[in-house]
Amino acid sequence: MITKEDLTAYVQQSIADAKVSVTDRTGTMDHFNIQVVSDNFRGRNLLDRHRMIYQALDEPMKDGRIHALEIQAKTTEEI
Amino acid sequence: MADLIEQEIKSEIENNKILIYGKGTKSAPQCGFTVETIEFFDKFGYPYELINVLPHPEKREALNKMTNWPTLPKVFINGTFYGDTDILGPMEQKGELQTLLKEAFKTE
Image: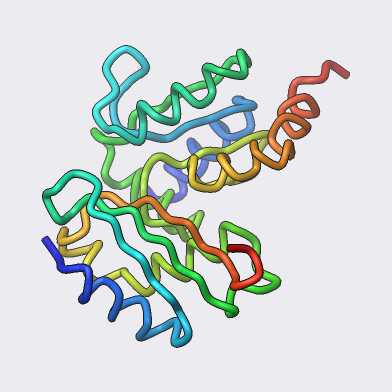
């Protein structure tokens, strides 16, 4: 289990300008949908954008606080 | 031991135009995302292979390193890594996936 605030903080630690919206998909606080909007994604393909987010969330994913994650990663122009 | 596993993975990737590494089997998938990926590819009607890596932790680790991608399922099309349906979904919406699949299955 992890709170939305902690999830957002983890993302913003490595993607400073990230605007993060988190949805708990199952009510168990460990299956999330996360949308990250950041201009750091400009010029990066989807795979690399998702890799950036996985790296930012490496710790809570490895220790099991996050069990499942659906990701959308866009720049401000793409929303 | 490691290069044996890498060899096994490389040949699986080469021998399957659509290859999914996931949790469970086609008849008994053991994870929601694996089910989602099976259903995703069933729509296109092309043949695909699902390889269960749940019983093979060392293979799972080798795949994580090879792709720099920490989760399952992992999808390879025509030998190239494409992540999972979070990546393939938007590609489908832009029509990129359909072209890629046609290219992969066109008989020379």
